[in-house]
Picture 1 (cartoon, rainbow, N blue to C red):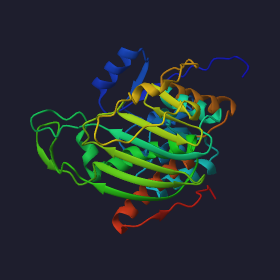
Picture 2: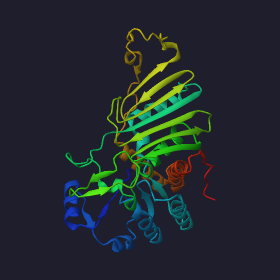
Picture 3: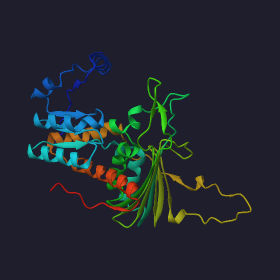
Picture 4: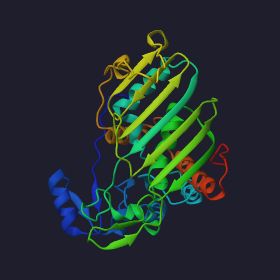
Length: 346
């Protein structure tokens, strides 16, 4: 707030010294090591940022907390809600600050949605639909464009665990708290080949369809798939319907249609639609200059760390994402709606 600049002095930590050295050279990072214990023991390094694989994240984060570090973690912070709550309790007990990456809220398209919502453009919120995914090749004739661990339960794979923590903080941040969910999971491509060309069986879902009740009374639908040949504006689109206006946002672009400019389509099955339905939507202009979304999330947490700025990305927020993940799994296995009570740190 006083105009000072905060510049991180990172030390890269990993297992492969050759890869670390190359990464450090590429990005001008002076320090790197394969000795995590030594790095954690250095009091000059205050913050531990983990982006390793999900299954190993809780143990690493706990080691960092015990070493007196603040922590900032990739999502999901753990395989289960209980582990996330345990990390939260440990960090709070030691007075350490904590956060989870919530980069998607800083994407230009979602920033435009938030501005529309804050300006009252939508009126009463009616419904929201999140469409996400693309066709991930199975590695048979064409190499897969996602890592094989995404498709193995033991490695923390599964579309819901990987992506629904994103949807939870997006929903909380833009539309309000979800109160209940019903979900169907599927494995569309049960056999795949890994990075070495070896066949393996997929033991997690690669498609998920969920319907959520929101506290505000609106309905929210999520259609997510890694077996989806895309025919829409973007790989991620969020459609918001309101009593006074509607909008569709992708990663960067957003279009809107107000009640006063909403056309009155006619329904006639005997002739093709004459109206250009896409042309009836107006682009939302770029009125805010934005940086890379990961950088903006990182800067917001560093500001919280340095001067106690606001933090909406705590481990409690991360645990709420895992609450949605577990509710979706329970809904599918029990074939019913699952309530999601208010989750608190107490």
